[in-house]
Structures are given as structure tokens and as C-alpha cells.
Image (cartoon, rainbow, N blue to C red; front, side, top):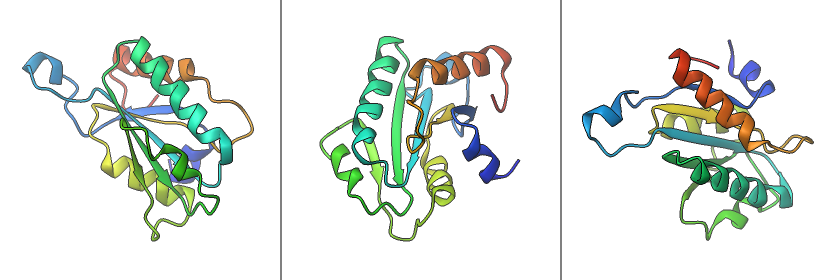
Length: 144
């Protein structure tokens, strides 16, 4: 499956770089990394990110969020600047959404990595992403 195919079907969850049994070893780690590649999402970016974070907190899921600009020119990454719990990557060498996805996945520390598409016309449903995480956990799947 290519990156182009993955971008077309978010949200999805894949096994991340951290060991999935990190909680049994007593190590402080992140269970879930949410990668948010974006290109000119406008005013919808921040509310979507906040809704995702609120839902993950409410589900008591240890997470990190990484938002990566894929050549955005609308300044939307500035809306995330004051949120202390999200890492924003705005690298001028990352010029498209596929490169943004790869950059975010490479920066992930979670046992599981989820991706959401904030550029689409449809509203992001945080519970759909969490359902993917639950299915991945239950099935020990590499990709859900």
C-alpha cells in the first residue's frame, strides 16, 4: 500500500515505533500518536485538533499530536502555536501532504500511530479514530 492510498482513507491506525507492551514494563511512554498532515485547512484546523484532544483525554488515552504542514500557505499552523500539547512541524522542504504524512510518522513516538485528514470536506469524527485504535489493540493488527 502506498502513501497515496493511505491518505485517501483516513482515519487509520498503524503500529508505531514504541513497543506495544510499554505499560507492562513500567516505562513512561505514549500509547498513541495522532499525525495530522495538512495543506491549507483554514479555520477548521484548530477546532478539529481541540476536539480530537478533548476526546482522547476523556477516553484516558496517553497521546501526542503532531501536526505537519504540507506546504500550507494560509498560515493555519499559527492557530496551533499556543497549544502546548501539540508539536507543529512547518518545514519548507515538506511541500505536499504525502511528505507531511511521512514526516509526522517519522517523528512519532507512540506504540500506535493514527492519521486524520483535516483538509477534507467531511468533519473529523474523533470517535472513529478511537474505534480504529481499539480494533488495533484488540487484534494486535499492524494496520486498521
